[in-house]
Amino acid sequence: TSSNPAGAPPLGPGMARNLASRLSDAPVLCMADADDLLHPRRLCLQLAELTTTARGSAVLLGASFVRVPEESTGHYTSWANGLDGRRVYLEQFREVTAIQPTWMLWRRHFEEIGAYPPDDAEGG
Image (cartoon, rainbow, N blue to C red; front, side, top):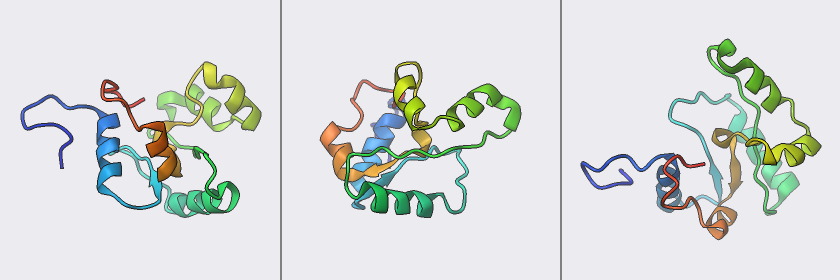
């Protein structure tokens, strides 16, 4: 299903994520880009963390990632994967510290926040 009328320019990943949220009914949303390869256990591990540690809290759970080819963004990948809880908080004003295609969160929090705004063509 397309998030925009036939012949119209693409509306971006944010609008696609909004549409996917509206068309699904699961209590948890997991973000991934079309060109991503997920670790075979990523969803199980994130869901376990979300349901045991977060238990319905307004939590945005991210994950580490690997770039292919690995050298493509080595410095950025090393920085993002090396953040501890304190640095995630402190560096949020410098850069996105939870890489969007690794997000998992409770649907109700996504909907409470209001999803992606219509003019956010890049989706974050």
